[in-house]
Length: 387
Image (cartoon, rainbow, N blue to C red; front, side, top):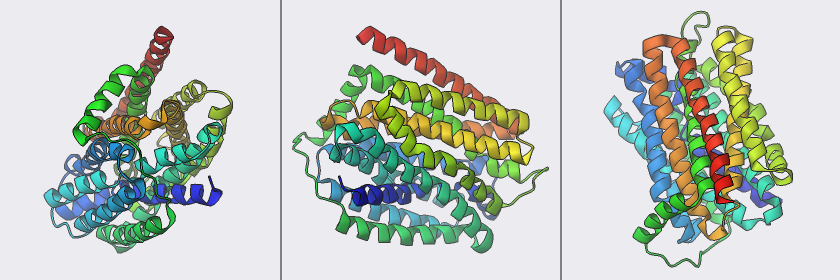
């Protein structure tokens, strides 16, 4: 697999998934413009993640059946249209519908990741998945930073116009650069979806990694869905531009993704997933004890992104060790449950903020990470029983 192709797929994954995260630094501005509360505007990131989970569940499995380049380009064009809907939204209901559509159409990255894993040699799978996931993580971080700046300077809706234009350009590049790949699978669509239920029942590694991923990303969403409200209050009193800049502190975790992938290749995903859960749990302890100090908050964000990304790469490396012909469906199951956890985290985070402010947010994040530790113990027991 050419290095240039890996880099292109990494950049495409980042640009695609960025569309999911433009809203997070803009929530306070959107709430002000539509005259709604923090709890009500919390529906925007939640519906984006629910839409993404549904899109992954219903669309990504088609990567095991349809020509992948065409599927990826088609969904990228749909994503550009959904962003246009957000750019012209005039009320919370319209914006909520647009957010759901943005989430449901932004699934190209989850077709690209198993595509990259299938194109490379098995011995390099962890490294290649790590590189593509690194691009995906950088896209998330850049999305928050750019969105916060654009929202501060030009208004929140401008970010959606820019995002739509970038996504159209991405569709053009992908149509010319991606290789064609037609699966030999001839399964009807309803049977394809039913087969996912059987895979989830039969694969204990998939069950456990899905739970761990959902809880980890749920905790991640608890933090990022409430940060803009925390920073708007004393002692910080920062606007959306500064909130977006906090995304840059997570670049350490994003750049570490290929290193984590190499460790997975040389050791095992079970080692790195424990490390990821430990780092994420530590981040919420830092937020709770030192969150009102700038250096403490920055250090916590670095730990949070590093921990969640380490867990994610470890989980995906685990499921990509299962048979190649199932990769799109395995990824669809895993990412669907992953973003269900993210949607739950967004909802619980904004609810906790309204009821107990920052202490409530940290308590919810830690509760989800304790659940991830139980998932790890369950994983070990299930795999031991199967062995």
